[in-house]
Length: 514
Image 1: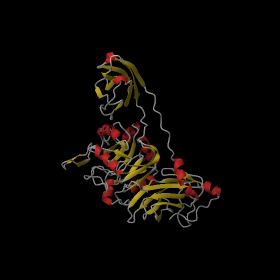
Image 2: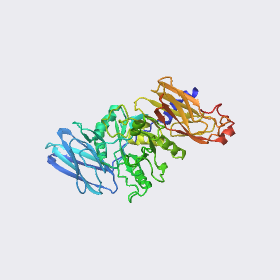
Image 3: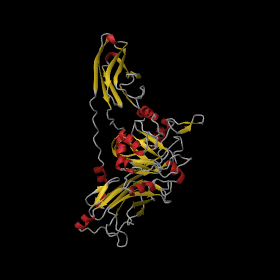
Image 4: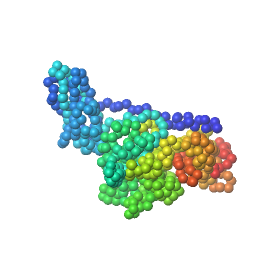
C-alpha cells in the first residue's frame, strides 16, 4: 500500500507542464507617424516576404488619442488579400487558413504591402504607429494551461466532404462545420478534430470559427482516403497526396514524407473494417506498410461500434489489428474517433460526436500538446463518451515508475500494476498482457472511485508455464457485466533484465498474474 500512496505523485512528477514559450521577436517592424494631413487617405507600407514562407502574422499598434482611427488591409505581389477596416488590431494569412476578412492561399515571395486607411485623424493630431510582422511564427498560445486529462474526438466529417444533416425544412444538406463544433461543445469536449476527406477547404473555416469557440480546441485534420486504406493526419496545414499507387504517390512512404515535412501526425483509421463497394478502401490493405512511421491507430470507431455494440472482440474492432502491430514492435497509440457524418445525430449512441471519446493527458490545451500526448501514448478511450469516467494506469518497481507509452526497466523480478477507475462501479477491471504466463487478471469494482494494485509479474513463472518474455506489454481495461468495453488504456512496455535480477538475487512474486 505504501507504493499506492506515491501513485498520484508519480503522475504529477512525470507529467509536469512545460513553461509556455515567449512570443518571438518580429521578423520586420514598420513604424511611422500620421498627421492631420493623412486624414481620409491611404498609406501603403512595403515589406518583402522571403521564399518558402507558409504564414504571415501582422500586429498593429497606434496612438488612438483624439479619435484617431486606422483601418488595415493587405496586398501581395499579385492580388488584394483582404481588408479588415478598424475592427482588428492584427491578422494572419497562410496557405490554407487566414483571419476572417483575409484570403488564404499561396504566399508568393516578393514585395507585399500593408495598407493603412485613415478614416479619421484631427488636423492638429499626430499618431505614431508600429506594425510588427512575423514569418512562420510558432503558434504556442494554448486555450487552457496546465497538465491534465483533455477529452476529445479525433474523427469527424462536415459538409466539406460527406457530412450531411437536416436542413431547416428537413432535407438532407451538407452539414456546416459549426454544427460539429456545437455538438462537441454540448458534449463537454475539450477538443475535436475535423477530418474531411482529402481536402483542405475546411481549414479556413476552422480558423474563422476557433475564436468563437475559445473553450474548444479545433484540431485541423484530414482523412487521407486511398483505395487501400484510410488514415487521419492531424496538425498539418499544407497539401498531402492521397492518390496512392499513382505517379503522385507511388507508395505510402511518399505520402508519409509529406505528412512529416508538414509536421503532422498520422493515425490509421478503422483498419479491420471490410473494403469493397459498400466502403471503398475502409479496411487497411496497404502493402509493406511502415507502421513505425504512424503514431496511432483508431481501435475504436463510432461507425463500427454502432454495428457491434462496443464489443472489442468483434472482427470489426481495431483492437486485434493494434495488438498484432504491438507484437511486431510498432508502438502505435490506441485512439478512438466517432467518425461522425451527421452532427445532429442523437447524442446517446455512436457515432455521435464524442462517442467514443479519446482522453489525452497533455501539458496544455493546444494542438501541439494534444498531439504530443498521443505520441507519448498518454491516452485512454472512454467508449461511451461519458465525460467523467477515468482510467489511470501505472506500473512500477521499487525504483522506477511508468505510465502508458513508457518503457519500464525491470531489474527486480516483480512489477506492480495499479489502476484508478472512476465512474464504473460494478464493472470489471482487467489487466491484460501479452506475456504467455500473465494473460488476464480481473476484479469487480466495488465503488465509484477505486484504486486497485497487484503484483503483476514473476520472472520465474509458476514452475509449469513457459518462461516469461524479457520484453512484453501490459495495459488496463474496464468492461461492463455483458463484456462490453467501457474504457481501454494504452500499454506500458516492460523490459526485464534477467542478468541484473539474478545478480541481485531477486526471486519475484509468489504467484504469476492470472
